Amino acid sequence: MVLVALFLLSLPDYRYLGNSERIEHLWQVLCLAVGFAGLGIRAYTIGHTPGRTSGRNSRAQVAEQLNTTGIYSLLRHPLYVGNFFMFFSVILLPHSYWLALVFILLYMLYYERIMYAEEAFLRGKFGASYSEWAERTPAVLPRFSAFVPPKLDFSLRNVLRREYNGFFALIACMFVIETVQDYVVQQRLKLDLHWLIILGVSFLLWAVLRLLNKKTRLLKVEGR
Image (cartoon, rainbow, N blue to C red; front, side, top):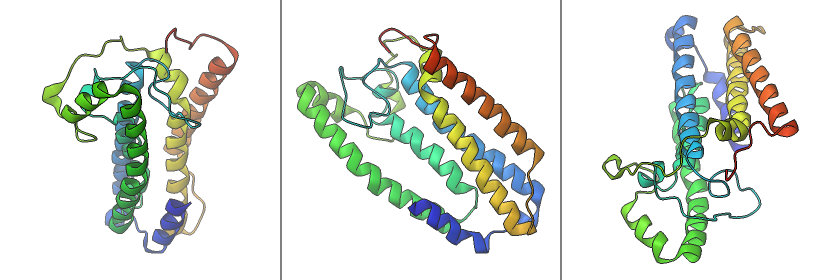
């Protein structure tokens, strides 16, 4: 809700970049690429890790084993880095410097507490093994020279099963913000065809994956 309020505050000053709708569309493509980069980080992480170790554990901390290979050999919190780029891509749409800076500050404050709680849990469960890995592995800035190949093969089915909501949420948020921004500049409701196509295709993919996930076992992977 805080981010929504900040976005609304940025609207009165909103203008197309260079006062050009074409340049604005190019900016939107860049923002979408940033969001997909974040989604890609999440996909790579989840695709190579076993179940009940990485993901959206909303009720309680869950870790049946300690992940130390693959992307977890580069940094300790890849999912939060992926989340950052997904959120940041939406925040970048209004091209407001102060909005981007406020978001970064709020994100750091919010996730710093989550990371602290998560690391305390892992340290208590895995003891010295966790401490040794944490000492040599940065929290969020990757150290590429320390890369260790992942133990598990990449599972596309696991990614599709767990990330379809985030994918559609990213597209839907961008569509809504882009539409609102067009209204602010042009003082009329305008639905860009390319965004309608992107939203429609994304919704179709979301609906199919949700159906497969809820009604079949096609996306189930043993141990994931």
